[in-house]
Image (cartoon, rainbow, N blue to C red; front, top):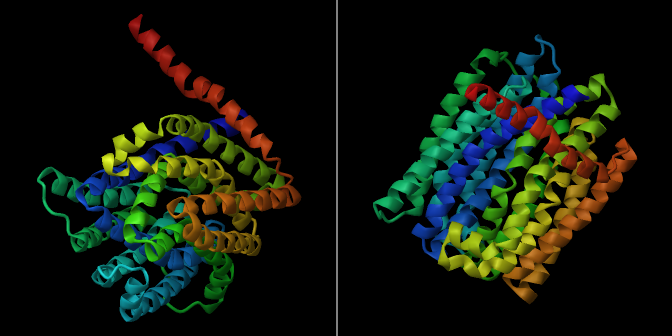
Length: 450
């Protein structure tokens, strides 16, 4: 088990640090955007980003996990067929979404109370095509247990966007929302080329339409897609409803609290990238005991990294808001404190979905996420009407608690998971970290002095 501990420490921390670079660029962009845009324009931009995230998930959710799962365990003979089948599905979805976006973009902009979105949606079609190819490359690399290309391509995309926003802020250039989308186009094209470079050794497409593999990918991916779509709707419906019911500015204020929470949520995404390919492989070779360990250990690792940051922000919310978002958003303290509470539940839910998908229980994950998303949608509507912006935070907290209870019951029944074991692993993380990383560095430093 000692070797397993070192694996999680090393793999987890490497992925955390790698993901941190990209997330910090993204947060840096937020830091300057929130100061360079008016509250209204920032709110419109958030509604745009929320909408395109849903569109990306529409495709990625159907392809990503299915491609990684089948490709990671396939023979060399079948791999080209799987990649070609996934590319065919990718292309079909991309064409459908682009056509729908061109046809209904103006209608959606009016529903979201943001007519400025029309041109942004039309420009986004270019980004969507490029991101489809980028996603395929990233999935192929992850299926081979490699993560460097994913890190570099995503970080470069974030760096390009950040550089433009910083340029505008420093030189006091008026930021046009359409220009931000043009920068996304440049960033996506660059990231796609980088991902191709890292994935090239694994690329070996077969010529033809492989209906058998397309059906397998679709039948597995449809529930993963439903899960991803319901999950992203659950996480973004509050901001979209705030824009529609109140104004884009209300959505922007709420997003400031969410952005701060996302910064400390880096470990959740990083560890998820490690867990899925590992769990998909281990269920075939080691059985459910290994999967239970993966869940408890991964959540424990995430909690150990998250909790110190959560405590600090909860104690000093005004300082954090002023430091990161400026004076315009210091009244978001109550929002931030509520969002911090459900952030503690996110690792449990995220890893629950990853683990169940990897053992073939995608249908179960789908139903649970749909239930919690429906609860979130309903509560958001009534709470926002009654309480306003705070209602969105309370609704999301309530739906996360319901989802947590359901997920833990299923994990205990299916795998024998005990949720309190995650806190045991979280506690053990600190001495393991000290023994494996800090102590050797201290020893090296002392030896140099001698």
